[in-house]
Length: 91
Image (cartoon, rainbow, N blue to C red; front, side, top):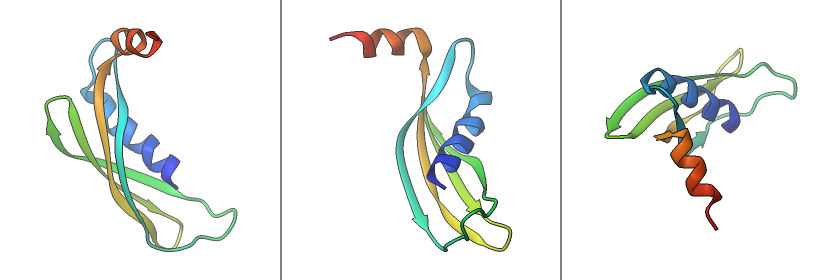
């Protein structure tokens, strides 16, 4: 469920990225509200809720075919891929 929420948040922020920018996760605050059966189809949705410079707050929900199973927020920051890769490669 959390992976699906993170992926949905990534896609929600992507339209705000330019050139070689992407978003990276900075925080996650999720409430697991209900259980789903093994093999259930789970769908996550995300909506950008706030922006503070390069930092985005994304409201996320996850549902199975019957009910909401999780909700919360995901924090993401927009970074330039080249600069980010240089930073993580430094010892």
